[in-house]
Image 1 (cartoon, rainbow, N blue to C red):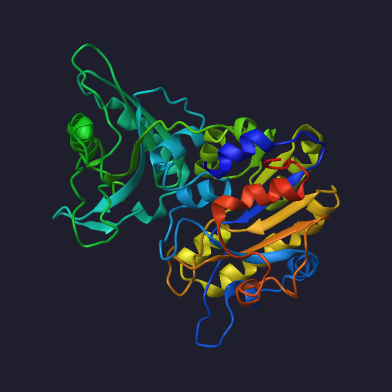
Image 2: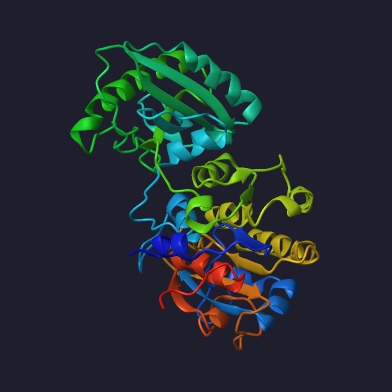
Length: 406
């Protein structure tokens, strides 16, 4: 029996409130041996005050040694086994922008990119083309026509857009979602060909290849976004909802579409249209009485880590710390501070390192941690634990889990 089977049986309704504050890519590494990480370098008086009253630890997003993407990282935090429930980024991105996927749809998160005359990638993100320039190009790709397939092309943000393939007519064949990305994650080389990993996805590969050909023709005169790569090719997933497995009315307060999409697939309501952390705090206050659980997502601790910018990640970490008093004044019963994975700026990438995690609650058993950081959390009372157990800990500390067995 898995943990969600237990929480289905044991969850209890009460008026307690849980807040999960996720600083994306929170974990880091010191720049030199014996030094401090970004989190340890940052001035975080509010996190540190919480740590003195909380129980801390280090969460393992997927499994020891595995560097997770954002999808698996968040699934673990939400209590879903990220190995059993693998959700492609395309489905997350499509759902996050409000596109209603149907069974049989295949969603793709696409990047505009720049190719040279030899067909090699010179910029994987087309110079991070601004949204006001990229959106009309995405809309132009709606001219692509492929027999027996309905295509939907939707702008997202900057160099990103979403494509959905939907089979139509008697001869469309099944569209599977198991196809490798075409982004080689490198410059100076051409995009990869889409490759199916199962027979059901062979038809999807044919459609994807034709889409790429026609897209290049339509974009051929563009100075930057003259091609695209396909990423996160995936079918619509099926997840049990937060209401089903935890008995929670859950809300997500996020800025980026992907995280809205993941939360929505888990059965959370997407509330507000916040674009800044201050606005997210206002959305939290406005919706406080309507929900039992709030997921608040902050992206920029991850993006600065991916950019390899130690000092910028420090500053972004301090921004997250500054919002803590606004959460506490609402009177949560449980407040969790964590990340979905580590993104050390010295690696400029997601990593396998356990993520510092803090659980503050009225009935938690505080440990001896005096500050919130990687080294302190390694000594904390939660120890190193799989992230998929964080939700059951939150429920227990909120008085929302009954006793198991006689």
